Length: 72
Image (cartoon, rainbow, N blue to C red; front, side, top):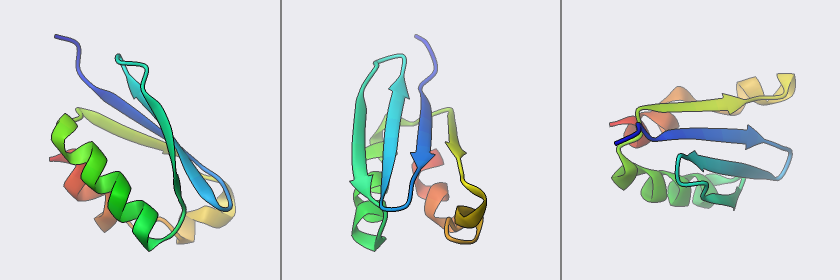
């Protein structure tokens, strides 16, 4: 079985998520409820890696604690 890899593209008002190798893609709002929905959706995947592409201004916004539950 191939490891599950999640990519997150951060934009001003939403996050685009892509899951490999399944090819699943979806978007969530870039707010507290969107992040909570993202964590709930990713947690059961047991992803081996989660990476993001952050614009420079977004680096202050994304807190590492939000990513931890999805990486278990």
